[in-house]
Amino acid sequence: MKTMEIVVTGMGYSYSDDHSVIEETLNSIRQRTGKTRFIHDIEKSAVTAVSFALDDAGISFPSGRDDIGLFMGIDDSVEDVKDDFFRGVLGHGIYGASPLMFPFTSPNAFSAQITIVFDIRGECVLMPVNYSFEDVIKYAAVCIRNGYTKTAISGGVLRKGNDVYEAGFFVLENAQNAKDRGATGYCRL
Amino acid sequence: MTGVWVTAMGLVAPLRPFDTIDAFWGALTSGEDSIKLQAPPLLNEKKEWLTASIETGQALRPEDKFFYIAEAALKMAIGDSGLSAGKLQGADLIIGSILGNVLSRERQLIDGNIQHRTAEASLSYPVRYLGQRFAIGGRLSAISTACASGTDAVGIAARSIATGEAEVVIAGGIDVLSDFALAGFNLLQALTEDKVRPFDKKRTGLALGEGAAFLVLEAERHALARGAKCYGRVLGYASRADASHLTAPHREGRGLASAITAALSQSGLRQYDINYINAHGTATVYNDLMETKAIKLALGEAAYTTYVSSTKSMLGHAFGASGVIEALCALMAINTGVIPPTINYRYPDPQCDLNYVPNTAKATPVGAAMSLSAGFGGQNAAVIFGRPPQI
Image (cartoon, rainbow over all chains, first blue to last red; front, top):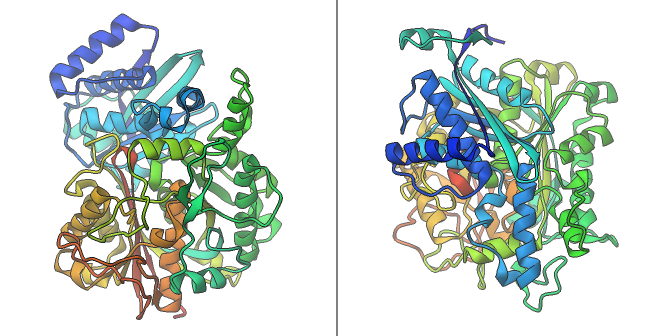
């Protein structure tokens, strides 16, 4: 493995039950990006946490950059959405499926929404995980070390209970890149 | 990207039951169409749908099909690799899937079992189950990047080897036909009621399919040391986000063009060196136009001399499995010098103006081939393969 130093320059966390924090943040995001519609609590939590992480790292958005990648993990949270969608089909037949909900039955809908809201055009990976996001963060680090991406937003969403989710993301970048733009690192990876 | 060999392949796909990849390839390159009208798997609906389903020849419950085809394809790949149990103990496994064993959860919900979700429904379960079942002892990872899942699994596996993280990685894709997916794609009006006609002016949409496919990727020195055969080398891979729309592709193919350009740059090849592209080619109006634009944007004038075909015209769209199935097709094109056709092609679309290998396979040497995937959420992936050293 290459030995390029990687630093954490931003962190963001959100909890879906913190409605006022999430709504206030989403309103601010709407003003900054023009993106107006957020549907699912998983999406709202993830977008909020990423906005905190980007602001913390001093990375402006919308980004429009393909050297920033998103590396996201998700546990079985998405199964809740799939259940809701299929119950609609069972209730009303195959033509009773919800057009609003179907896109969110694919787990990468949540990573996709993040790329759309913040205009992140680089590497984009969604890994279903059991409990830990270790593999997601390791892969992000491999991608930075080997030049596949310059900066990585890495983290994920966990289900904490019925319709309750928490999201956490880090901004990782190579140390030289962080130094060049005057960013402060929390720690080395 | 250097030093990454594909040393084995395994596949279960529609058309008909196959014992070997060669038999599958023979049927595919002769233009066999597996798509026909069929009832949905579990729901008691009167309507039949054009789908490409796998006939297992076994008395299986629909909810057992996912692991049946997964095990059969993985067994074929492991058998083809000649890897010992000891080597498998050190191998990694990475699997791409969009819906996992969705029929298992469908069955539970149909039976009224709403509260208790079994572990089998989890998207992270298949890789854990198959790792244990085949005693694959390395890192077990799942990928779910919509229709790019399989291509991303292959690409991430290749990076693991190229960066020295692993010596052997088995990369696969698995998905099955479900009532769930039929309902969803029907909502989007993406399903054809005609034939699947990729890049044709009168294309009307896709047919859903299913499949399981695995490639064994290996560090060159590791493969050489054990005398393994080589189907091809992985030369480049990239993933890119459109950052545009949740269900529709970026109209100008921005993300896919960027993925192709990045993969090409990694490969060290020039635009004219790519002889064949296995396209995502779903036969939806927007995908095929976007993909044509992306190929032209990335390859420039070379786009017009590169053969581009869609095997989905014969196999349907196998979701997360399609990327691995199509990577396998790209490798077979290199190995056999035959490019599979785009069948059901009748009317040229002036906006889709590349060489789509219409209706009949093309015999021609293929030095380098690329496989493309594009999915929901603006997921794009490109992987490039080169000739094995012996041909």
